[in-house]
Length: 347
Image 1: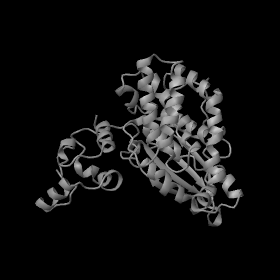
Image 2: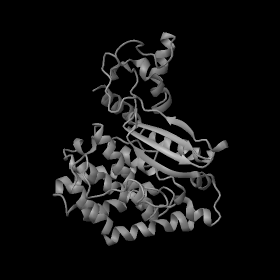
Image 3: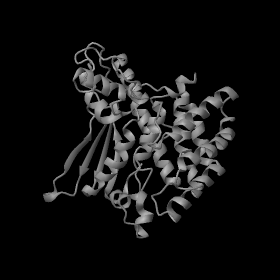
Image 4: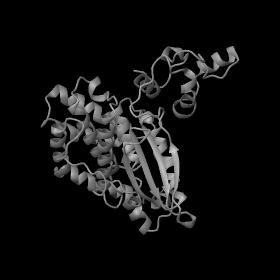
């Protein structure tokens, strides 16, 4: 999954044992990795992104890395009993969750063939046409429409301007940001590109995903200079924020280029609750315990919340200081991502 070698860490292996039903996923995986039209699109995507705009790789290698990251995230979250609602909400099967991830990861950047700017929105009609052809080989009409809907939602929401409404979409969003190793910026760097994205990407040596001691997923980022922190702060954390994966993920940066050869470990993100897969009880989890999350990660106070705070002369988030946390305790309506995450944690 490295930028320089996408097969070096946790590549998806269709022959391996997985924590999810994989027969259908493996068939779709084989199809998309060998289909001539899809492969042609992946090659064409880099013309606007790299050749014309001097941006980082958005072609075949990037897609392979994102797909590997997405399936690795999925594997780790399934092991932690995380809830996946995309396929389920559509009345689809558990086996369709990984299919959605494979297709969305493969097609999320296809809009680059039109333009780098607003490529997310151009990806939707192009991916829809491809999906119409692909899905007929695996599903009847009803199921194909529903899988297509979830794939398009995940594609759209890999862009930070759109809010993921499913765990599957949140995975695609985060997996896209995890392609940050120096190999991704190789072409623009060699051609003289020296913008902050290129320089900071050059500082990232390796990105690894594994089960953490206090999180379902630990993202460990090895970097050779502090410039790599930009990739984490401005790109990865921005996409993790609001993805719905916040309670399950921790991020640690390891700076190997320090004085006296010491290795510096910097914790950049802690999961919402430390125990992997934990669910807080309704009696023990209070509004105060969620305060910092509401304040700093998901949403700003609504007009209703500010009005409530002014009336009662208290901070806007102290809606029921020691009362059990219930969504109805919020006088305003929290974002969909916040509601979904709180509900998942409390169950």
